[in-house]
Length: 475
Ligand SMILES: *[C@@H]1O[C@H](CO)[C@@H](O)[C@H](O)[C@H]1NC(C)=O
Ligand SMILES: *[C@@H]1O[C@H](CO)[C@@H](O)[C@H](O)[C@H]1NC(C)=O
Ligand SMILES: *[C@@H]1O[C@H](CO)[C@@H](O)[C@H](O)[C@H]1NC(C)=O
Ligand SMILES: *[C@@H]1O[C@H](CO)[C@@H](O)[C@H](O)[C@H]1NC(C)=O
Image (cartoon, rainbow, N blue to C red; front, side):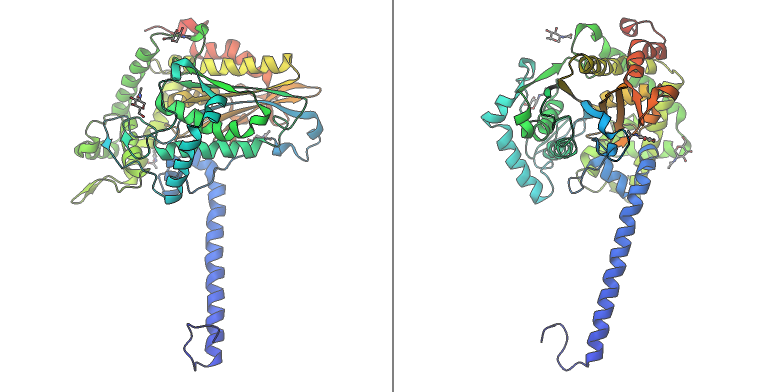
C-alpha cells in the first residue's frame, strides 16, 4: 500500500477523488498566500505614510527577524538604461536608527529580552563570540570616548533604553542586506578605486552596538577592500563631530520641544483619543506615559515587539487600535509643528539635520576632488537623528521612525554631467519628495548634487529663518 492513510479495500475512485481534492486545496492555499504577498508589496508605499497598526505594520515597527529586509538600494536600477555605461556609484551616506531596545521608562526583567526564536538565540551566541574576537576588535576599533561601551548587548536582560539581543541581530541582518545590495556595484567592485569608510555613533550603548553589528556584516565581511576603521564618537544625538555644529544647550532646546509637543497633543486630541489616553494611564505599565511617544515606546518595547499580550482588565484592554490612534496623532503632529513653525520645532530640527547633511556635502566635494576614492559614511543614531533629516528634506514619514529605519544617499558620477544623489528611506526611492529637487535639478531620476550643496549652504538656514548655524542655538 503506497498511501497508508487510505483504508485497505476502499474503492479506487475514492482515492482518485481524494487526490484531486488535495491538489485543489493546495492550489487554493497557494493562490491565497501568493495574492496576499502581492498585495503587501503594492500597499507598502502607502503604509509608510498612513500607518494603520495591522499585523503587517507591527512587523515593520518591530522588525521581527523572521522577515527579510527589502528595498531598492544599489545601482541595479541603472541596468538597461541608455546611460548605464556613464553612471558610476561613488559613495553612500547612511543614517539609521538603532535596533530594538527596551523602553526608556523603568524596566526590570532578567529574562524577558531573550530572543524569542531558537535560531536567533543561537545566532546571537555566535555573533557575540565574533564581536568580541581580537580580529574584529582590530578591524572595527572604537574611539577612546566609546571604549567603555560593551560591544554587544546583554543576552536576556531587559534594561531601560538598552538594545536587546534581537536589536543587535536586526542590524546584522540590515548590514548583510547592504552587503548584498552593494558588493557588486562600482562602489566596491572597481579595482582602480580605494574606499574610504567612516562610521560615527552617538555615545549610547544602543547606538555603538548597532554600529558594530551593522559594520560587521557590511564592512568587516568585505575587509579585503577596506582599511581598519575607527568608529568616531559624536557628543550629540544629532551627530555633530566638529566645532562648527556644536550646540552645548541642544538638550535643553529638545526638552522645550518635548514640552511643546505634549501641549500640542492636549490641544489636538479628539474625545476618542482622550478616552484612549485615560485607558492607557489607568494601567500601571503606562501610568508614567503622558505623551503618546511614551505610550508607543512602552507598548512596543515591553509588549508588542516582545510578543507579549497587551494589558487587559475585565472588559478594558489596551489594543493595537489604541496605538493606531496614537501613532496617527504623533505623525500628523510632527509634520504640523514643523510646517506651521509651532514653537522651536523647525529651528531645532533644522539644527539637528545640519551636521549630517553637511558631512554629505563634504563627501560630494571629496568625490569631485579625488577621482580614485569612493566614500562610505555611516551614522548610527536615534529616531531623533533620522526624523529631522526627513523633515527638512520634505519626505513624509511615520513618526516615530521604527527601529533600524534608514536613510540612504547614493552619490553617482555621470561621466559628462557631474554628480547626482539618489535618496532612499527604508528602501524606497524618495528623490522626488525632496523639497529642493525640482525641475532642472532632476536628471536620470536623481537630484543634482549641486542642489544639495546649495541647500546646505543657504536653503536650510532660510527654512529655519536664520543666517547661520549658531543662530539656531539659543533658548
Ligand atoms: C551600558 O551597558 C552596560 C551593561 O551592558 C551597563 O553596565 C552600563 O551602565 C551601560 N551604560 C550606559 C551609559 O547606559
Ligand atoms: C566632545 O566632548 C569631548 C569630551 O567631553 C571634548 O573633548 C570634545 O571637544 C567635544 N567635541 C565637540 C565637537 O564638541
Ligand atoms: C488619523 O487622524 C486624522 C486626523 O488627523 C483622522 O481624520 C483619521 O481618521 C485618523 N485615522 C485613523 C486611522 O485613526
Ligand atoms: C525615483 O523615483 C521616481 C518616482 O518617484 C522615479 O521617477 C525615478 O526614476 C526614481 N529614480 C531612481 C534613480 O530610481
